[in-house]
Image (tube, rainbow, N blue to C red):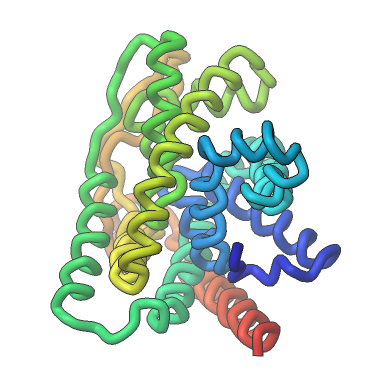
Length: 317
């Protein structure tokens, strides 16, 4: 299994991989941000998709015929275990913190993610190969899909175990695609607060059913992604980069709320918004646009990705 993550160096490499998993988990808990975006930014996306894809019938046959060690190697088990541990731990620990940051420092947090997206889109241009009409069309399609999903409105439904399983099945597909937010999709499906509350309260039955849906969706969807990456890697990255760029609109720091809705617990959630300029935001809402904090956050996001990219390139030279 080839790796873009530098995983071949044990010890320190696994620590970095664990931290990447934590970053993915934190991103997946934010409506509008994708863990897949972090995977692309940190250069582990290909390995992640192909590793998940390898959990198949052949892995089961290897387990029976050659034992667990050979099967573990085949599925790149250590990579998946370390990354999954980081993701799950981060989801558990960051749920409350992310809600606090979204509530208290929304503009700065969104600006930080925009900085990450801008820098990573630039660094990923080399993965797209020579640009032509096909890559340009796929780039625009990727951006368009991100914008289309972000325009959906939340759906109100009774939350049963079957519905919860299906929500996990659908949301995981967005979570592993850069630019598409699994958390936002959960909000659209009407279960975001329910699932996040289950994580905070450690509601095991809810977590198990939802995670089972995620696992089934992940195993199925990874086969499509691995097929496209193996056969059309440069075009695939043009599409993925388009999804990244499209997420800048979704992450725009200054948003005017148009409509809100109340969940089953009586709490209000934003239903629809539209983006405005910072000075219009101040006039419309009477709130400080926090321009300085936003600019610092964008620069910080760009700096982190640029520094990481230089370290990555130096490690493989």
